Image (cartoon, rainbow, N blue to C red):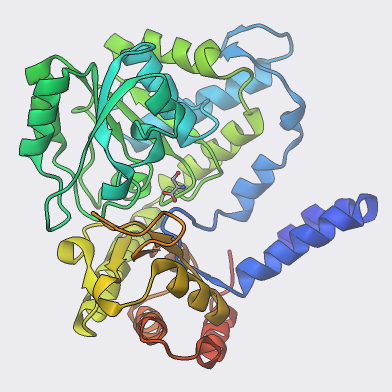
Length: 413
Ligand code: DSN
């Protein structure tokens, strides 16, 4: 907290109104347990880099080939981030650390490999995929000819369906990855399907990136032609994206990031990515990633024991997707109750969900942020009891003191 106080103090003098909002956010995060699977709490060092003066610098281009003068520091920072990224994801042939987000990383990759109006195949959002995998409300569903695969009745990817769809649609890019898929993905099987139909394989590892970097879940490096990710979920860095590409597609991917889909890179975010990658290279990060996974498995176990349904019946990573259909409550209702109890969660569609996206029949939970705060089995058991009580309709206020005690016992980094 002290670093945050220090960094906002000039702001408090200069613009007390904005400073007050940011202070409220510090308090909100401090007094809430974040179980949103895509969020985490990055370190004070990452936040310091992200707020640094290099935010002023334009550096369009790539290291040593820029369109502006004065980029020698930006070059050093970007090269350091790239080298650390390749060390972290051993076997990666190249890293582009410029994407502003996971969605821009995906757009650039699809532009590079499929081209405008090219055919792509990805997992449907409702099945656990992501908007930027070809959803019709995303530019990836507008610019490309997209078809989408679902999951089987157990909530698992059905590789026969993926193969059938690819044979029909003949995509240039097959996408593997999701935003609410709690199981490991068989990347080798995806690569074989891609090869059968002459497509490139793009793996979007935004969610499990940190777990893969730490080697606690299997990843697609060396298998997929291109791997995209965000840097702020389990990887615990600043907001941003990254692309790892095989050498044979590197040139197309780099030009599709800049100038294809972005202008000047956010060098302050690249510096913060370098800090986060440095942190993730330390042995402590592996222990952290292992605990994230164990905590999710234990949370799943406790919820199942209480009779709740989970999509796929469990988890292999940091995500637990609760199917509320039999519990006779909506995702939106439980999200609201959770907030009143001090838990930040998100309503989420479950496969075949009959309810609209602002209501849904599911609840997505993730253990990355609370594990950063230091949670282990005891605290996860308490959270599981709170969630079970909320789903059953108990008064959220009843749980608020328990949640507050956990927040105070496990402060933010
Ligand atoms: N919004 C992110 C998530 O929650 O998974 C993905 O963009």
